[in-house]
Image (cartoon, rainbow, N blue to C red; front, side):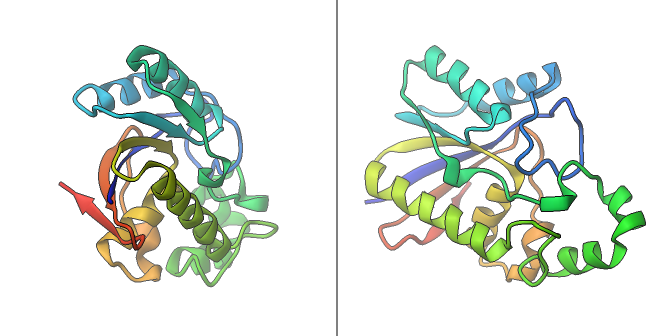
Amino acid sequence: MTLQLDLLRHGETEQGGGLRGSLDDALTDTGWAQMRAAVEQGGPWSRIVSSPLQRCARFGAELSRRLDVPLELAPELQELHFGDWEGRSAAELMLTDERGLGLFWSDPYSFTPPRGEPVADFAARVLAGIEGLHQRYAGERVLLISHGGVMRLLLARARGLPREQLLQVEVAHGALFGLSVDADGVLSERG
């Protein structure tokens, strides 16, 4: 059976742009509005699965109560940990680690930010999390509230993009995408 998985990226955060990674930023009022607007015409969902970081989980809790569906927190679907780059913007990194940023941007699988999580490990963690969701909830429609990196990874897989194009996948704050996950773990994007 197929799992219908709707992906929702968290909204704008209080700390603004940059590589937020495992930092536990709160949403701004705009961020809350972005997420509420995104789900207005969505669903119906049988359950909500969320990253445990508050920029995802707090909205997940609100929506779970409003829709009267269960909420599950999934640490394996958290954002990539950027190590020493956490909280820093690309502009700032251009001044302090231009070479590293260039290598990461051209192929994030071949360069890991200092003390960060390798993208290959991140991908394995996220894909194992998606496989677990399929095993538990095949036949259902589930809303996954997560992060830009998680969504880029899943959308790149569904679109058949080469790994070097991972960071070229556009995922705005509050963006909502639909995926199907089949029994073999193959991802396909729904219109």
